[in-house]
Length: 439
Image 1: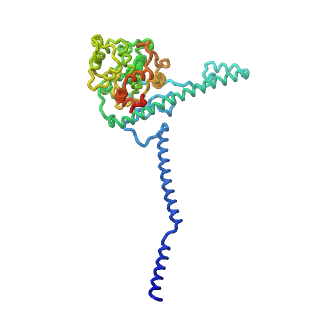
Image 2: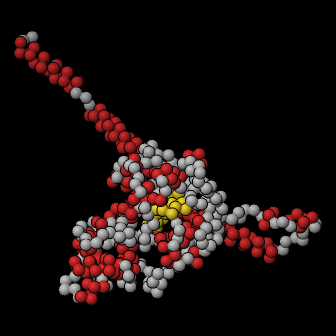
């Protein structure tokens, strides 16, 4: 064999070895299929984990893996009967030893399963009289109809209790989240007397109520007076007596130990209102109606600073402040007169992140939520939250429609600044933006 033939043979053999080492196309396809299958399985596993976390957060009574920044307060447990106490059994905070005992809680829902005859005093006598005549078809229909109506009413009450309890769970959860994000570590701070100066105490019901003006506070003071025994009915308490002669103690009047014990063991209550609506309500009450305090104390400096060519009468009396002038005063960092509780943000007035309220009610459903609270703290059965307006009774209540008409007097920049002023209230208490152009 010649040298040339040997080289050709070696080259041919080397090419065959390379072809033998090259994997077939089917092997590449198999590898790609396995890789895609593995990636899809991984994505599916991550998605299932996300869904399980979401279901845990949406399911009442589920234990969370991550604990909140401050201790979970005693709450309206949605897993127990609607008529249950506010205390959480063994896990609830201990009560003050020298404080009055909490009254027993009355059942909210009547027991419809118990037969009327079984609870009647004369039931045994009726049975002793001998067999009863057979029930007619008409009587059976009437009995079934009455039982159906009673059962339907009971189911509606149970659903309402469950809905209100779930709403409280959501509001407390949102409060924890907002406070953890914007005021981390505030729960470890010492509480000053000034920070509890708006909190009223009702020892017999072990209740703490933070006063929020223009959010039903007048009627809440009436309720506290009845609970405390200083009045027999909320209807018998005039407006001035509710505010200036109520004999209610504030939390700041106790010593440090008394403040700490009550904050730890009492039910802490807060009722809020849509911030812009609360602001308009305060303006209408204090500046559009005759007022011997707010006109001279607030009206005169507001007119003096923000009104061009003010008349002598307006400067002397302080009457006739416009809503735009009032908002200019509110947003001025160098306002000519200080802040007032009637339009101070609730996040500053009641310090919700610091005091960790157990019950957060809303003015928009004031009666329903207030009565739900009263039943759960064991208030007398004949005590319900009043729904009367004794101050300027002829004036229409401030509604969202009225609020929109007042804020329509402002330009977009003024509305945005007012929204920024109350931003923490909107965020903390889950109120939507009142205007679409706000950000």
